[in-house]
Image (spheres, rainbow, N blue to C red):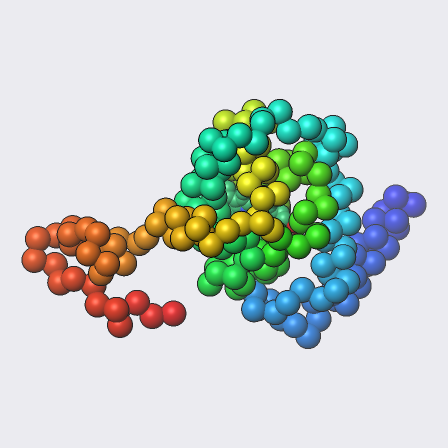
Amino acid sequence: MKKLLILIVGVGLAGCVAFVLFAGSGFSAREEPSAIEALVARIAKRVAMPRSASSAVNPVAPTPQILAEARAHFADHCAMCHANNGSGETEIGRNLYPKAPDMRDVDTQSLTDGELFYIITNGVRLTGMPAWGSGDGQDSHGSWGLVHFIRHLPAITDGELAYMRTLNPVSPPAAVEAGLEKPLLEGAPPARHGDHRH
Ligand code: HEC
């Protein structure tokens, strides 16, 4: 009986908190999370992170080759949301809820290497951040190299960004438009710029 009462009060309290957080703002992903929501999410992530994960030391040396691989990998897999420079200023990144953060800022840069690795390999539930790699704690996806690359973002050069643009994924119609590929079906009309609307 006592347990049931505690459960009912608990659910009621959670409902009140949810009401305060979400009431009035609907469910549009365009909104910016409120300061309190962002703070709660950041604390929840810190608390949920296993201690052994956050204190993990990057076992990979930041050699020029590792950085080059990570840069290419980031351009191909991450930049669609995070942008080549890590600002999060992409069509997807700024329209997610929560938004893709500016990873050059202190909030991201103050995470430990282990925390960055944990987030990359596990993703962040209830956000657009997917989990990458095999999920067994192994670095099957070059994620420790990505951690080095994220550290390098505040100092990224225009030359690197120009190179990354050549590696960003291009949709088939955009590739045809840019003259990189032939239309798949013989006789299919080439994509016109006006065909793609947002
Ligand atoms: C589909 C969009 C999307 C893709 C693709 C994506 N991310 Fe994310 N990422 C997000 C969002 C949204 C967040 C913010 C999650 C949050 O608020 O906790 C995030 C958060 C992160 C964070 C934590 C930053 C912080 O300050 O908490 C890291 C690190 C990260 N992403 C790295 C990567 C890497 C590396 C890749 C590519 C291998 C990648 N992401 C691909 C959407 C994406």
